[in-house]
Image 1 (cartoon, helix red, strand yellow):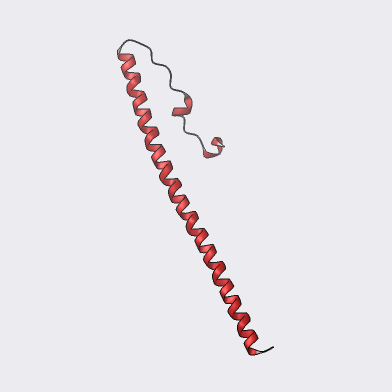
Image 2 (tube, one colour):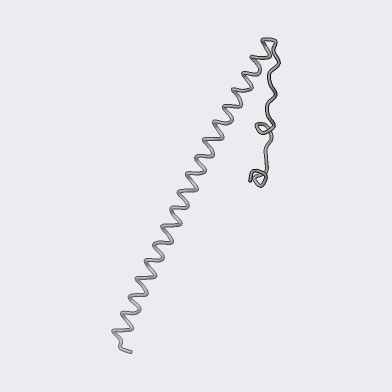
Amino acid sequence: MDAAFVGAVFAGLTGLTTAIGGLLLNRQRQRAESVVDLESEVLDLRRKFESALRHIYALREDIARHGLTPPEIPDELTTRRDRRDAI
């Protein structure tokens, strides 16, 4: 084998390794950004849900104050489930 051929093979392998490494790093970065976006969305939905529950409780108090019986709150809104149960 010629020294130039060996050098060319190593240069090609180095370039290929660099390209694959770059792709893997980019994929990891995109996943990390996706996780951050999902966590942000979950936090936003949790805040909205908690706000809606406070509003429901306030409405129930108003209904009761007017002498009416408020409807029961569904268990789905008050029971905390294990993540495995949600699937």
